Every structure is written in C-alpha cells, then in structure tokens.
Image 1 (cartoon, rainbow, N blue to C red):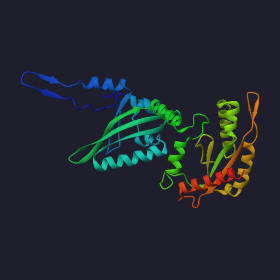
Image 2 (cartoon, helix red, strand yellow):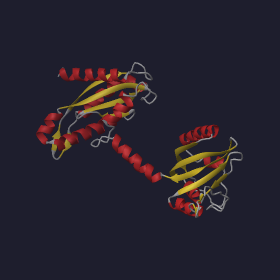
Image 3 (cartoon, rainbow, N blue to C red):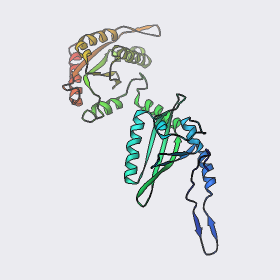
Image 4 (tube, rainbow, N blue to C red):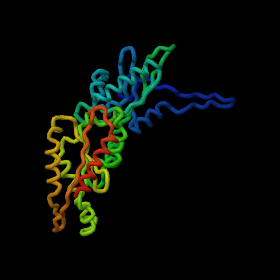
Length: 309
C-alpha cells in the first residue's frame, strides 16, 4: 500500500546470489521512507484509464484531499497555462517514444497558494506498448524562489534598480534577430547625464550616486509604458519604447523628460544641478529591426547634441 492508503507498487528490490551467500538489496520500505523524508512524492498514471496513484507527499504538494483518488483532469487544471502546455507536449512525446521527461511546473493550489513542483517521469512499456507513466514529484518552491531572487539581482543595476547593461545586451542588442527579441519595438532613446563629472568632483561619489538614482527614477516615471529602462553605462540610460500611438507624441515626451531631469536634486543640504542629452532612433520595422544599427544611430544623435553645446 502507498503512503496515502491507495494501491501503489514498489519495484526494483535487487537480489544477488553468490557462491556462499545471498545478499538482498535495499529494503523497498526503507527507500520509500527516505524518499518521503526528502520531500519527494512518487506517482503513477495508468495510460489506459488515466487513473492516478500518489504517495502522501504529492497530495501535500498539490493541497488536495488525501482521502479521495485524484482526478487527472482536475489536477492538470491546477497547472498554470505555460506549465500545462509544456507538460502536455513533453508527456505526449515521452509516450510516443517510450521515454521520459523532466519538468519544473508552476501550480496554483486550491487554497490559492502557488507552488513549484519538479516532475521526473518515465514511461513503462510491455511488448512495446506504453502502459504506465511513473516517477517522482518534488516541491522546489523554496529553491525556485531563491533562484529567481538571484536572477533578479543579477539582472538589475545595483544602484538604480533598473535593468543593467547585461540584460540590455542580451534582450536587445543580441536578440533582435531572434524570437527572444523585444517586440513590437517603436524606438530606442538614449539619455546621458550632463555635468555628472562636476558633481562627483565637487561633492563626491555619494552625491553622484544620488544623482544617478534620481535620474533612473525620473526616467521610469516619464516612461511607464517602456519595454525596458536600463542603466547601460556610468551615466548613460537606455529606454526601449513600444510601437503604439504614444510614438506620435515622442518628441513632446522627450522634451518633458529632459525638463524633469534638469530639476535640482536635493542631497544633504545641497541642490545638485545636472542636465541631460538625448539621442533617439526609430525602429524601421517593429517586428524585424537591426538593434545594433538603431543603437549606433541613437548614440550618434546623442553625441551630436553634446558637441553642439
């Protein structure tokens, strides 16, 4: 009997016979207890009837009543849309090829809480006919949360909290020709802080940092619809804007942003005054665009403005 009280087969108790002794492999019940203590649940799905057999830990992961046999359709409905679609494709391929798969899936339990479950599954066949899908499920919510936090930290500029140069490079400059590129894209706006070196020289780097933080906040405030706002250099920022009706007002929005960035920044009793220069490049095609060419045009326009002053 499984931990839940429902029928569940335990397999693979190895027996080895030698000339002078018989040695039994690990006790299946001991293995089951070790798996349970590790927070891993075991499952089986009959591929003819879709009937599920679970150990207790799987019930706990999904937050469903252990006294009732799980209904597969109801359980699949707990997966979020992306995980459900991926599960369907991986499962179908595994059955077709008599193979297995792994998947980190996000589920929404009946009580409203969200969990991440890692599935490791294998198709069991007899005479070439797939009969069962067996494997393990493990709650990896804590690991996933920690991983996402690390990813978020790695992708954010530590000073301003904006996207960093690495993200800008990966998602825009390196990805414009792939399906991972930012779309539909309308324009790239580059903004550079004028007078940043003088603030650093006169008041110190802490004042310069305060100036950058305020610039980042003001740019984000000016472009709440931005696809990305990034700090891509010491005092340089990039804004990726969508292709929509707001582009018709882009010149006005930029002028308002420049005026906002020129407003003094209060810092430790001082009023820090800085300006901003900008360069903009429009996407020739919102779906298929040359990111490097756009960046070059915007950068040239930015430095043309700076040289004109």
